[in-house]
Image 1 (cartoon, one colour):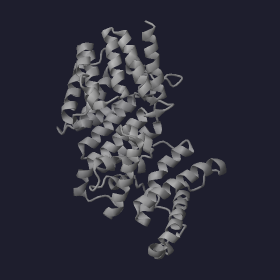
Image 2: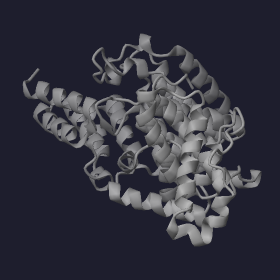
Image 3: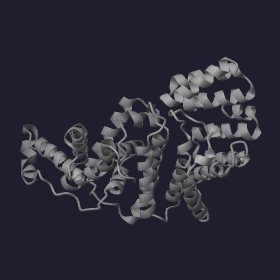
Image 4: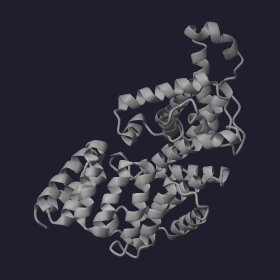
Length: 406
């Protein structure tokens, strides 16, 4: 990861290390997470005003430790915790140089006692630093529902009595699918944010790539860990061309491919080629293969759309994910014509609800079919549903141009 350029970047990078140090020392995940968040908030207010301390990580750990010690010394908790609190030093020792507790935290959050519906949001909150609102948007549920899930997950982690350490080697495969999915969601939120004024959040996508590299280094024998890293690199390679001079969204068909990061493409293709030889293809490898076809095409029209259509068909059959069907419809329109794509959208309303991407894809396919009025209406609907302002601007502009007959 690059050196943090702002206080916010630094705090996001240090957050897992602070939480890891607290959980290791005080053995209470829920309380440690609350104290870490309070310390991060205090730092966000104090550092820009007073200057960054010489040892930011130590500052955060000591601030969080003071909050924990004070809480445990409170009148309500005194009877059962005073002996433990008395043994703690407010000036807790800093973690060993170079220690990064991120992976341990990820496996801890993905404890077998937690269902994926609890483990993934908890890890996004504790390790990725996403807000409850951002996580709720990723899972297409109300924010209040997601807050309840995260609270239940913290309680289960505490009740499990899990030690703060990497799981035994034989137990790791059971948690890998959840851990990888967490990193996948984190990258997606960074690549196209669910809300806000910017198209992307490079802090999140950069952190996801860092985590994927760490997981790959820790378990190079895991094919899907390689596939996920390849997918991220091949996708991130296009980021420099996704935005215009004023931050506006530039769709794939209009991107200047000369601005794509060829170094990331080469690295991603190398990883993908190596892992596909193992013959254990999973969903991330399929998605990486799709990204590779895009990245190797000289332009949008000369993309191998039949191959992409086939790959999306395999992905849909493997995952039963409605988003795979949505992307398959877009590929079908390019390979076989817009009517083929529109036919694949039938029934997706029941599975995706009023998701803005469904309306946006339908709008593009209707535009290809020549139905400008219907396409404009779908673009307007999609624009009203997205909370990402850059996507909203793009969709609104498309609707206006079609309505004007341009």
